[in-house]
Structure formats: structure tokens, C-alpha cells
Amino acid sequence: MFISINKTMFQYMKQFEKTLASFVDTAAKNVKAIPQLSNEHDFDITTAYRIQALSVEQRLMRSEQLSGFKLGFTSKAKMNQMGLNEVIWGRLTDKMAIKNGGVLVRENFIHPRAEPEIAYKLAKSINKLLSLEEAKAYIEAVAPAMEVIDSRYENFKFSLADVIADNCSSAGYIIGEWHQANKQVNHVEIDLMINDEIVEKGNTNAILGDPMASVVELSKMAEKYNITVSAGDIVLAGAATSAHYIHSGDVVKASFKSMGQVTFTVT
Ligand code: OOG
Ligand code: MG
Image: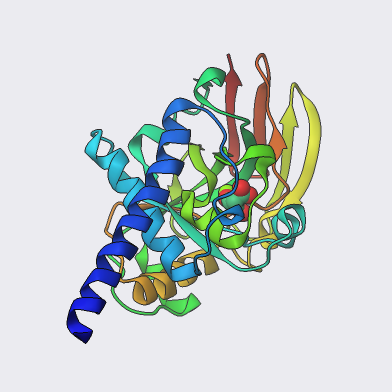
């Protein structure tokens, strides 16, 4: 009796998660915003991560390849902008990559925003909880970067569970010149510019006090959610400043003192 109820419950939950995963995936595919899932459905953070996994599975079935992970809400600026204050993580795919100096095709995005980040390339897979000191040995290279986020929800409004289910708004990323792992990347000043006008000034130390702490956070998430983090994976540390809406014709540039520039044009 109990067994059959549990099995039915399990199948019902699985179907529920798949349905919500297909809502966010279809919104991304059709470039059309949807109402927040939490308006109509009640689900917790663990379920939200399962929905995320199922929606990214849909992308992988369309031949996208996992390229790494991104952390979100790792700075006060982002937490305040979005009104949420817990660190979140999402999955990146190769299709989200835009070349430095390349072009973002506006019509493939709902309401894109750009934000300056630091990117790490991992030297080895992460299979234990790391301290900040230990994290250094897991990094092959580090680069200035930008993320393009594009919430699938109307008006870019969401709850914590909503944004996690929506793969943390992941939509694009641009990586600048790779530097050696021992490059000083904390306390680096950043200017975010749109059409040569500075729209945000920030510092990499706004990211968890030290962007390398994002690798530590990822090691915690990997253990908690049983995810495989592999050598060669990219880790986006989270934005150092608020994100800015970008529009057709914009030249978007993030300039990192002593690290170089990251730029793209919106067509
Ligand atoms: C959620 C993603 C947050 C970051 O760097 O903090 C994020 C969002 O703001 O839409 O990517
Ligand atoms: Mg980000």
C-alpha cells in the first residue's frame, strides 16, 4: 500500500518537475517571457535545482555541451539589485559562449543584461570541499569576463526558487584573455561601459571578498547537489556590480585594470 502510494507520488513529482523544466526551456527557445513559476506552483530549492537539471538536459539533447558553471548573487550589488541574498549556481553550455570582440544577436534574447565577472578554468575536477587555500591548486587560468543574463520571466522578476529553476538566468558569457592561475585578480578595479559611457564602477573584491571564493562555493554545491565538476570546466564567479540592460547597437565593454578588456557588440 505505502509502496504504491510512494511510487505514484514519485512519478507525479517527476512529471511536475519535467513540466516546469519544459516551461523555462521553451521560453528560452522561443525567446518569449513567461510568468514566474512560483505564481502558480509551490516548490522548494532542492526541487528547483532538479528542474534546472531537467531543463539543461533539454539543451544537451539539442547537442549543446556543458562548458562549466556560474555562481550568482556573490556580491552585495547583485543581491540588492535582485532582492535576493543566497548564493546560487547554474550550468553553462558551449552555445552560450560569445567571442571576445564578437556579436550578440539581440533577437535571440528576451531582455538581456550584461554584468562584469571573473572566469576561472579548472585544472582538475573538484571532488571534495575546498578551502580558499586549497582552491588555488584547482585553477588552471583566470580571465576577465562578462555574463549576459536573460531571465525567462516577465519583467526580470523572480523568487529564489524561480531563478534557480531557470538556470539562474544563464544565457551568454564572454571571456577575455586568459592569465596564469597566480595572477592577482582580487582588488582589481572594473569599469562597465556601454557606448564608451561608464555605467558601473566596481572592484573584484565585491565578489565574496575574493572571487576565488566562488570556487570554494562551487565545491560546496558540488557536494550538496552531487554534481560533477571536471577539469577544463569554466567557473563564472558572479557579477561584481549590478547588471545593465543592453540594446541593439550597443558596444558593451568591461575594462579590468591590469587584466584587460572584454567587449561585444549587440546587433
Ligand atoms: C540571476 C543571476 C545572478 C550573478 O552574477 O549574480 C548572476 C539574475 O540576476 O538574473 O548571474
Ligand atoms: Mg552572473
